[in-house]
Image (cartoon, rainbow, N blue to C red; front, side, top):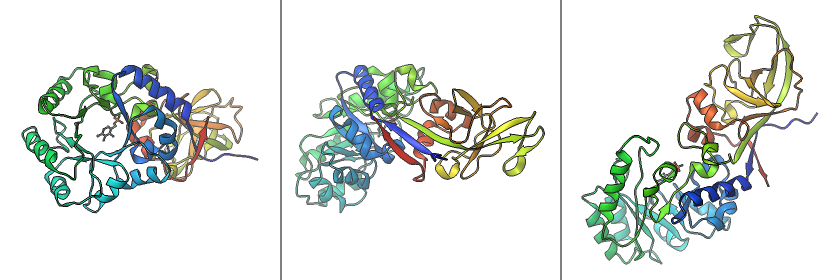
Length: 360
Ligand SMILES: *Cc1c(COP(=O)(O)O)cnc(C)c1O
């Protein structure tokens, strides 16, 4: 017997392909590759190494993520999307070429008090309508002037904002945010970036100097469509194996709570993946799994280490056969639709128990 447990197979060819698609969509913009949260669960070191030559900068959300990249030999600039959390981080950032967003007065004051060995590159975050982080449109001039005067700050400032509704194609909110961003930065020196995946795909006028692709780099759509519609290829194939194929009698339940009963005699497949691996527990009956060239439905409750699928009475499936939970044959967007859990969340919730295999 040779049965493989839950494994995320990660393709560098798919990553590079997706970056080529992104470059075609925004040929005049530099690329900040967003690799926060362990590269959306794909493995931050592998992903960053695979794409480093194709991008201009990386972005993460925590200093510890940036330092992990440095310790693995990544040399391109790295931007902290929420800026620094502690004054003590500034010298570490300065010597490691880690750039920071400044989105509030507290960060600006910390910069004034700091004495980093080298100037830190700063991106002023402007709130254009997300109303989560960023200085208000009224404050932008004042922050710009103060930052410009600080010897602690690299003379080339940048400007960042973020769309809240870029996936809503019939809303005028994105246009509104873009025009606020353009007027708040008009006449100021520095590169500008506002578009993440939704902005890149749907709002070409928002590409500006730099784009910030996250989810589309991994081949996943930021909306309820599938990535393939934009020519993207899923970077992750999440697989596991059948560890049992069992005859099952009509009317008998399966799993905790006995929530499903077989409408006729069938075979039940047990797949070695569960919520302990990060596969969501709360998926409805019928959520698809890909197995031996077809879709089979999940039946019964997902448990910590396993889930059960209805293979049908004629099943030829055998212990050890590979099941695909999401990937090329079964888009994660489809699983998202069934489960009501966003692809972004599905992909970042995998636990360390899932093995990672880097293919090609
Ligand atoms: C996460 C993030 C991105 C990437 O978003 P996607 O929708 O995954 O492309 C870009 N910019 C900021 C500020 C982010 O927090």
